[in-house]
Length: 140
Image 1: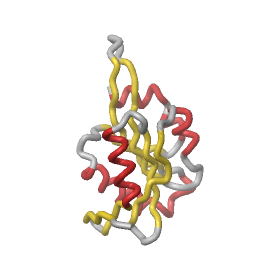
Image 2 (image 1 turned 135 degrees about the vertical axis):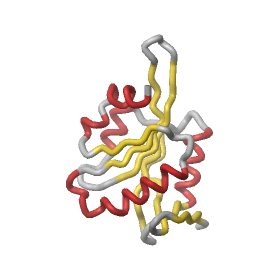
Image 3 (image 1 turned 45 degrees about the horizontal axis):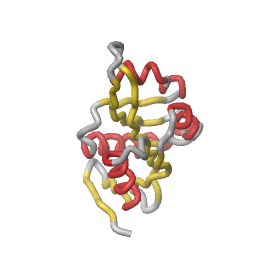
Image 4 (image 1 turned 90 degrees about the vertical axis):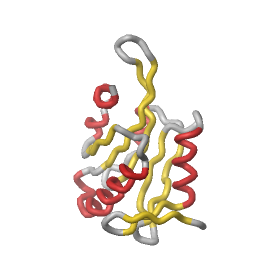
């Protein structure tokens, strides 16, 4: 498997499947969500979920006790009725995942630089922080 390595405060890598999933998110309408997790070797991010998820499916896909990084294309209508799509980068860090915070925070910082087209960044520790209207307000 080929991989891309990038430098932050510690080495962070994106697996080939992660690179492909992020490309699909950027280039196709069939994918609106990529959920990433760290795998071996240490510092390597891999795509755990790649799909076209509803908001409810996205929230349900996040583990209750483990951190994840999420890149999601949020679709919504403006108050004027115009359709918009905005990419979000989410650091999912539930309280039970405290031991994973340093690694996932480094991965989050790396992705903020790597995904320059993503302008909405947020950290969520509880599912209610990912409520659809809140996300729309952040993206709007």
